[in-house]
Length: 166
Image (cartoon, rainbow, N blue to C red; front, side, top):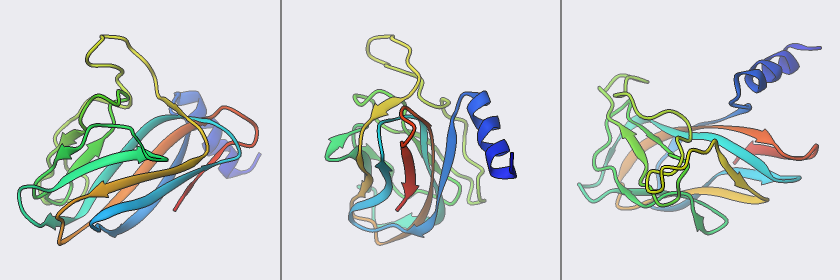
């Protein structure tokens, strides 16, 4: 068993599944494809974005994640996100993004609820979002500058299931 398989096995044992990183890229107005699901359905156990270059564009900046045009969260006003800010899915499409405000230093955000806490409205606990083939996108409005990197963890539901960074 090579190192990648050992790492994959460790993530699977930890319950988060396989990690896929999307390198930091400039934030843009409109939808941006960040991950693609291929081969079969997956259980997304976490999806976060970490701001690497401060966002500008006014207090009305919003962000939402979708999968093949279906919202994975409610659009959230993120305002002028500083370096280190994290946005995370809660696992309930009726929830806004969980936001941990950064301190202008990489990866130094205020704590937020961990991966896929479940439904805030019904109290039902769940672990992940089951999704099929297609693109996972993020849409940001009004932004004039900024950069974000994204991290997704998933458990394949089929032997051929895979998630790739776009």
